[in-house]
Length: 146
Length: 295
Image (cartoon, rainbow over all chains, first blue to last red; front, side):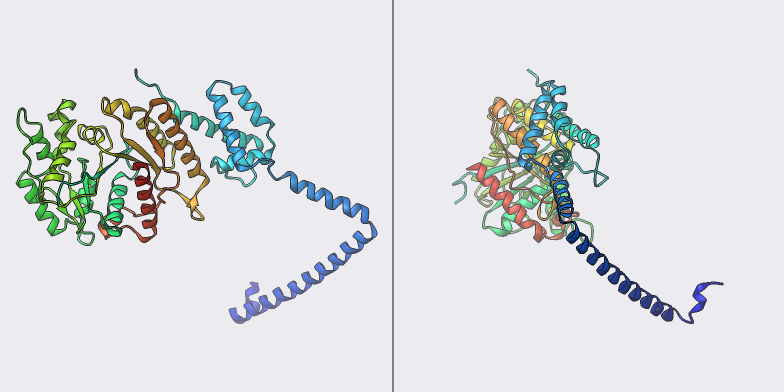
């Protein structure tokens, strides 16, 4: 039997659903309060371990930040373009290979690359940056007539 | 008094089609004439006649404005078009006797006047082979306009050039004060600028290359600033301008602060009564930048 037949009208069904939502919210609030109290007690009982965990979390967040400025990222991009233009492809590749992921991400963003995924892999970022390097070289290559 | 000063001349050109040459020429002329006392003359030199049709088009009816249509028909019938001027100029041994008056120049508004294009320009390249024959045409025509005494004293003359290097564009480029190159934020348009800048000097020689200004048109924006992708192309073009200036001894500036934002339906502005309010500042900024490089 269809559950919707438990209600005489759709308004009655909506009212019932809203009541259930409110009840769920109250339950979740109680759970949240209880977890908060438990967390505080654990931190109080093991202060050294808690401080270490906090430090690890901060360090992990810091390492996601780029170590260079947008201007430095563009200057580095120009250096890579210059190397590829002069045939030193291996040197150019080495520069990008040694760059940490946050710096690569910054460089990709500064040269206007957009990725379909929010967190692209390092390989995808390198390839995209090399695409822009090739584009930059093509834009300036000419065969002037004498 | 007519003919006391020579107007500043600006040619909008790019061999890449669709970058916005016609719209930019008209928007600059419209902004300048609407927000200053300057007398502006605008030329449509493209045989495709886009600017001519846009200026004369009645947006509501989709046909030419009655006033423009009747003026244009008379101009063609009386042989007072730009093609007739060229025809007269290139006649062997003849003195350039082409009377300049308001049957040659259309008064679009009080201080914005217009020399329309004609289909005959399509045949120009077939009828005149010798570029030497054409090189002084625009210089002499501008001299006639300045000294005719029958038309306004123009402060600025703007040329909408065709998307290819024709005899007429050669004639304009060899005498104008500023070559204005609109570019778009994509690879093909940027590549077009690079090719144009690298060939312009050779195309105009032995005439000195005029001052060149390149700017980003149809700029994609985010939070009222160019997007990172657009900024990448702006940076590339700036580098191209610097390199070409150094290597070829010409003056090519990239107007990095004078970008014009992308707006869907901007072409309707020409037939619809004026530059959209949100773009007026962009075109005023572009104009100020143009005047800046001309100084």
